[in-house]
Length: 349
Image (cartoon, rainbow, N blue to C red):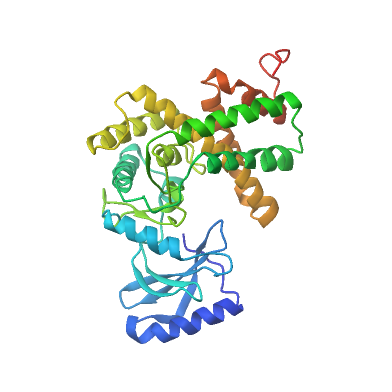
């Protein structure tokens, strides 16, 4: 997504332009065309500039805040698996600069927001499902483990930021005990799934439109990949925090993914009902985390547009929590936070 914001001079930008100037003759870079491309929820920022082959992308990742190493490492893993990820054209790890091939200016999110008929939508998302299956076959034994401690820690973001900071609420002793047990069970169940390479943000903003209809999507923002639960990324895709998918569409893509994963020999299991439950619980875990993260991005980092997505994410949380009796305490807490009259307000938590 290319930004129209003009360049704001700063020390890092001066250093970046000096580095690019040294590369210009070799790569055919037109440094005078440098302009903002996009930013993300981290301290990274991206620029685009014209080159001999069209355009290129520059990543600016301040070494004191970001490490380019995981981006390079995971990117190679994904390239080895035959996926469409940016190529490294030049690098300066000491300064935190990378020059990358450009996968395009439009992502899935923009295409969906502009409007797609069902045929065009399926033409985009079915290759993304197959790319996910291919990604899960990539080597991941040398990636950080995404296990019970990490999953449990992430759930504390829901309480700290969504419950306490956003709603200004304090849990009752009964709510506190119920949620601690519920979240411990949720983290343990999700961590027990088979382990594959997990992108962690495999959703519409990080999938770039293919160069030809029906082609592989470009995959970006993969530097936080881990070795973790096999259902994590399909849950990210079908309960996208920025795009609302109805349950019948979620189910269709989940079935297609499950069938493709089984055909590829991934450890997905032969019972779709069991898989469906596992991926819903994983989606619940992820969306509770996202509620906390989006509030934190607003209150701590001033990125208030993330709050626009809270109703959608809460809807996904309710969708799953209402289907399983053990998550009833969570539903009652959401009712209280949102000022909704509980179905049975006299029932003890």
